Image (cartoon, rainbow over all chains, first blue to last red; front, side, top):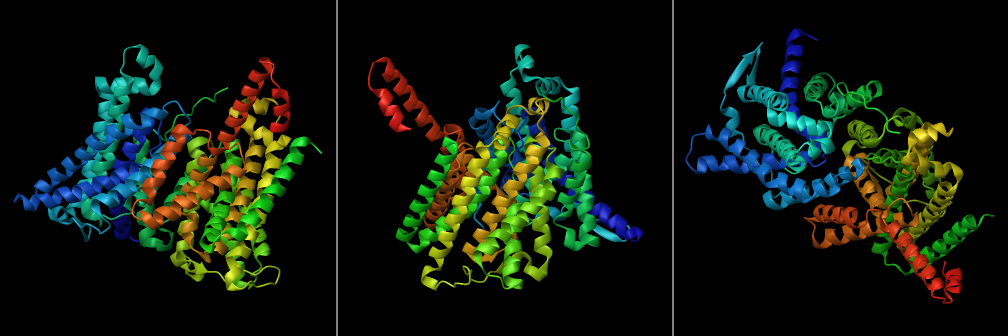
Length: 300
Length: 336
């Protein structure tokens, strides 16, 4: 393998890892705060992608320049979170707090099934192609190869999201309150924290991140039924490799999965589908709690 | 013989006779649906075996698919089309895989266990899609099954397979019930309540989990083979995670108390699927999702718990009647 090949694999892997990290960040945040492993997270990604497809189509219709589609995609993600987060968290998931983790897993599986058909009902089954925004940043030459600038912009977006969530959690007052709730919701409630509001906030941010990843990857893919299924399984692999509830873990996990996949695509095409799960299984055998998870005491 | 064991055998005979009689009355489409429901039910029976030990596998598609492929390849490559032999091969093949895999995953609990099983089933899916020698993502078609050398005519082929399915289901359900009620099976419930105490009492949680997973795997292989024969076609989607999701769905709907409830709930699922495919083809998953949430909210113990609740209520009213000086004692004696 030559240096140019390694560079190609690295760049492709990091681009793939960038949007995957944004999805996984939302997943790991929701798990960290609410102790819910959200199987519907991939569907939220899909809804974000569909919403972005609809919104960017509005841009030329309103006679606005192409640059506005970036704003349109942000609005789309925000709209998805504003509509779906309160319905799902306040309307449904709240009913199952304190019950078995696996039971809540099943509830989110039900939400996945419902959203899957709901997106088909709203947007139909014909694929959407939104490639215009992808031309906004031109091309960039790395080594001997040209890369689409938009793809590299995604890396920046991922870094911004990761830093924003990390700083928000560790350096702001609200973040400290969230950390307190993660540590012990009961004691936090006794200290006057509105735990329900913290749950809603965390879930809102989680949904927003999923939708954001969906809306900004819409120009890279054909938006059609079935995209949610692959995203959910891949992002699970990411958070499990990194350790559930850990932000650096999600970043490392995304990079591992992204680069492993890019390597498979170039060097071992037969293994493209299962290399992700293989990596995850190997990590779990050696580090049952993931790379970054602190070990928990066993309950007697 | 212990009373409960005797009751189990009695129930098995009654169920078998009833199912056979019903089979002669059912139209062909319903026979096909019922056979498929039994196949699904067998896999979910395996999940229930795990659930009793506090674990939920979200990747039973793994063993379901292995059973189907093992028997399917035997049928197409070696020309062995005898249904009872194929069912046995599917059961043994998946059981062996379960025995190999379970020590690796028996250390994990809760979500990690669930997700690791998903990962394994998706690895199998990824591998099967890429192996073109056995059909790749299209899978392959199975020959019509025979029964001890007898090839049924087209008109009664569905009936013959249904009868085979009934025998498999009754044997598997009876064996599971006997296992659940045995000392070895009862420990599962204790493991679910508190693992550490079970260890202190001198039993091995690890062994219980390995045993339960192997049983679940064997049942999954049996169900996979049966559905392969019913559908006449096998493809890698047998191992896809959404297939596994349906098995968990059935298990949750039935609950872990009753063995027969598994087959009732898989029949309900299959009927809901048939009807919504026909009348609401676009929203079948949506209906399923709403249904699942309703069950979890209003029937947390599953269908099997309804029976228990009724029994409790009857006992309560019977004791209340005793106090009033009625002849409730007699009723109680004949009632149960």
